[in-house]
Image 1 (cartoon, rainbow over the protein chains, first blue to last red):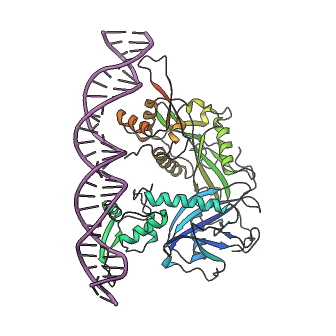
Image 2 (tube, rainbow over the protein chains, first blue to last red):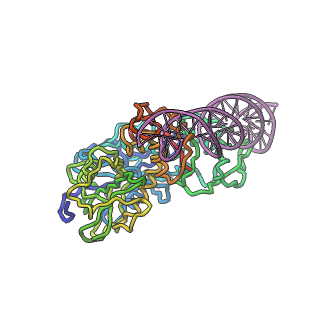
Length: 225
Length: 225
DNA sequence: ACAAAAGTGTTGAGAGTACACCCATGC
DNA sequence: GCATGGGTGTACTCTCAACACTTTTGT
């Protein structure tokens, strides 16, 4: 195939699946579409890539526009390129997953509350385009990553307790874990640094920890069967 | 960001990392570029996507053009979209990995032998564009998939011996494995069907097996440390 | 003193690892 | 009968899973 031949080019978008924990529940950020097609339906936030920015930068920019957040864990998920996934024409989209600590979020002023909302991943409505498929894919990947890497820690504050960490895993996997076994396992991995002890709590004060590794490093944290 | 705004579109290509086993060695198919830029350098086979075919179909088409093979294990790897990865302009590429059984390959007549060759993954030359980075990524993913899924079986014939399977893992991981432990582990997974016993071999005739599961199914085959 | 969450150990079962010899066939 | 790969078992270690009570603080 001669490379100089010109072909009509598809449009290229990035979609960002923003996850956070709110009210002990795993949530995803969705926006309400203001335009046809799928006007008024919920969709994954995203937008067209610009010619002079990398895909990752495009994802970061879109994320910042929606949430005001700059520093997050961001990971490319998959590229969806079926011919008819967008009725407007040929559009391929590169899906990214972002994990944000909900305390740091301020949904952008431009994006008023009616148009953007956090949805529990167990109650995702019917979405525009092939976005339900994309969310399903992201959830599978998220769980996989929780089992085999340190990404979970991106949803916790810098210093955290083992109970917070355990609750996070219980939330994501919808499964109760044994406290003693969980703590024994995590501590045996040697990935945590002891910090100070929390004060001003009306019960036995817990030990705070921080992560020695970098977010996303491969460590077999916990297999969930 | 208004969706009706027009942006210049990037070009979109697919690259296919074709792996096979030849001479007890893991090999990857590379082609020699006939055009600038990077003329005469080796590169990963690929080409531009067409407006009316899905990404997966584009990858399959390119693969068939190069190798004549239709039925293979094909998996999307990652999308590379740095701004300057192609000196001709903005080109993003979706990388696919294909695993082919070398007995079924007939490198296409169009692609004469001078222009396409199998390279041992331990001796990859300097490649065009960012293709070395892409190969590195693919190798990591390949190994990961060998550990946790049944993809390895796509490199074996329909019916195979446990020794063949073991040699395959030893080749990919460059590591000797204990025969007794390997067989015990594999058989305990309950993913193999006993077939007939091989005949016409000048030693004790081995048991043939076939795979009960589908290629790519998630099964923790063997952790390689 | 009581409420609330933190913290802690032992036992049994199953999986992984190390290791060496006999078996069935063709020539 | 010998060369060639095929096939097999046991003992030890380590990890995982099940399970309930005591500790520390604030009010």
